[in-house]
Image 1 (tube, one colour):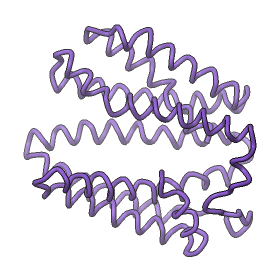
Image 2 (image 1 turned 90 degrees about the horizontal axis):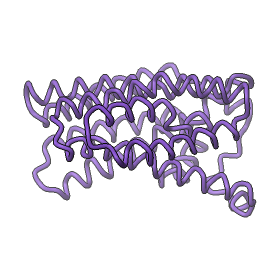
Image 3 (image 1 turned 180 degrees about the vertical axis):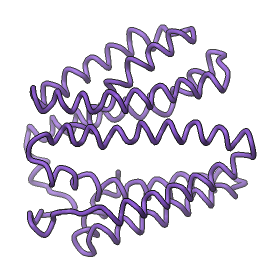
Image 4 (image 1 turned 90 degrees about the vertical axis):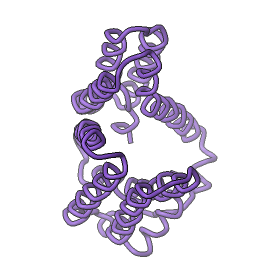
Length: 259
């Protein structure tokens, strides 16, 4: 996300599609190059820099487009869109594990890169923004906004919310393995997490449109934090960990509907 100011300027200069096409290339290159890595610094460059920047170059242009087309039911639309990450996450988790068991992790990275490249190209073909109609300012960094108290509060919530989201997302599988669970059990737990997002995010979007976006985001953020302290921290068994996965991931990631 640190590339957001640069991406915003590039979108203003070249348009949405060229920027996203560049992302597709560097992300695919990141996966392919990672499959040939033999040193840790090579993974830092491939999976860290290339894939990380690639995701930023895709996410930043795509984030505002859906909201440009909706005045009513905007959060619901964002919820349905965000649910796609759950469906895709489950498919990639099961698929990647099957590829690793059949071949190896190198081929898993290559196949993932190729599938992601094709999917992104298809998305670029059909995606349309309304920048020509609404004429957004598209500033790389707006210093006037950072001086506003309510914007600072929003940024603080977004930062802390996403910090917890990323920690849980990328550590939960290792947490399951640290309890002595098998790789298959850890994979099943992660898939339950992904399926939960596919179910929960559209529902949260509906509630946000019918109730209040701010109140809904605050309530579900609090509920998610309480569930982490109540169920995740004391979890020592497969059953409780699976229950937490089913509960938490239906309410986790409120940021995506609020954005």
